[in-house]
Amino acid sequence: MKGLIIKDLYMAGKYCRTNFIIMLIFLAFSLWQRDSLFIAFYPIMLSAIIPTNLLAHDERCLWLQYSETLPYSRAQIVSGKYIVGLIIQTAFLILTGIVHAAAMNIDGTFNLASFGIFMMLLLTVSMISSSINLPFMFKSGVEKGRLAYYVMIGIVTGGSVMFSSLLTEEIQQKIDLYGSLPIVCLISIALFALSWYLAIVFYKKREL
Amino acid sequence: MNALEIRNLTKSFKDFRLDNLNLTLPSGCIMGLIGENGAGKSTTIKLILDMLHKDGGSIKILGEDNEKNIMLLKEDVGVVMDYVGLPELLTAKQIGKIMKNTFKNWDQDEYKRLLTKFSLPENKQYRHFSRGMRMKLGIAIAMSHGAKLLLLDEATSGLDPVARDEVVEMFYDFTRDENHSILISSHIVSDLEKLCDYIAFLHKGKLLLCEEKDMLLSKYGIVHCTPELISELDAASIKHTKVTPYGIEAIVLRESIPEDFKISPITIEELFLFMVKEAK
View 1 (cartoon, rainbow over the protein chains, first blue to last red):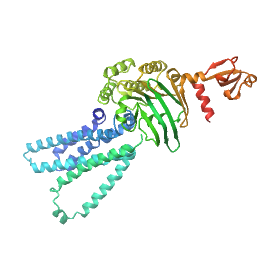
View 2: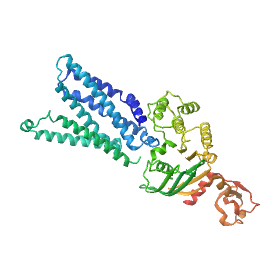
View 3: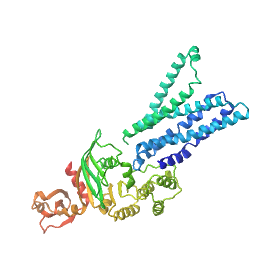
View 4: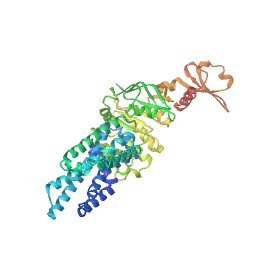
């Protein structure tokens, strides 16, 4: 599987340069706008869609068909994408953590609990962003997979709006949101594992 | 041992059916798969590689069931399809590194030798390669990991006649080792005629024949004569007739033709066209 990972890292270096530049710009910008979680989350979400971009390029150049002639199983082909995604996301999470911790230290605002919450939020966003689209794309190809992804995003967004409208102040006081964050974080990791498993199951059934 | 054994292979699509295909390719031999577009050649190769799931039948590659451990089997199988789907922005050098980490028996020196032989630049991006150069790179990859069986689907298409001749010669050399075999499909029947030991004709998903090439060429011949002379021949020995401005041209079974008739050799292409017309 090493060959698949090397190939995807080469491709990420060639095709995703713009993503990396935008991610770094947003990372720098997030240091000045530390109250805005969106600015901190955005580059993480961008890093999470890199495997999807790579899969789209694979499909366009017929690599998926070509890789069937190489000694790789379908499970390895799927896992290659997830591992490359993990490598890039982990690297960016660590970079974001180091940069933010250093900035907090410089202005003397570093607090381990707040920093821990910030990192758990980043990890949760990272895991969820990369979990949603890959199984659809491995099942039906990038074009149809994107459509399914948008439908899914619509359902998730609609669901979140409904959920927050039900979340009255009284309920919020009863739930310890920060205390439940590690559980949410674990659920997002489980979701990522489920996504990986489903992508393998779907891709094994697909005819190329 | 047989390099490839296909028994009662069946696969149905909405508008096409590969019907009970039986093929045997002995080790050390080259088999040519001839058929018009949509005859089922690529489908057969995809089924061998388990890219498509078969509806029925069995496929054995180098004595092993293709569904049991296709990953390991692919170490011993070199494949060139009619497209070579490599990433457009990578160079032949980078592709070599990927393959080095893909095949256990990757031979980097052989790969470099083939790149030089085919005049393929190591540091030029794949997107700048012509169709012929892409096919050559695909062939270089397929022949650099110690494969015992080559599956070639229109691998010579897009090559100029000189390069094609060179590649055909390489395939021929490959099978000098009695453990090496090739299944090749091509529209360029003259290449197959030059190269193959066995010929299989596919038409609309059905196998019309699969025989040794020399046997076929010695079995059939062409007679050029007048309509009066042709009527003297046994009707069962005449397989096909065509009226030309110079008389009648007939494909005949050599063994039933009287010795005083002059029989010209038949080409595989002529035989294929005749079989397809007969099948219609």
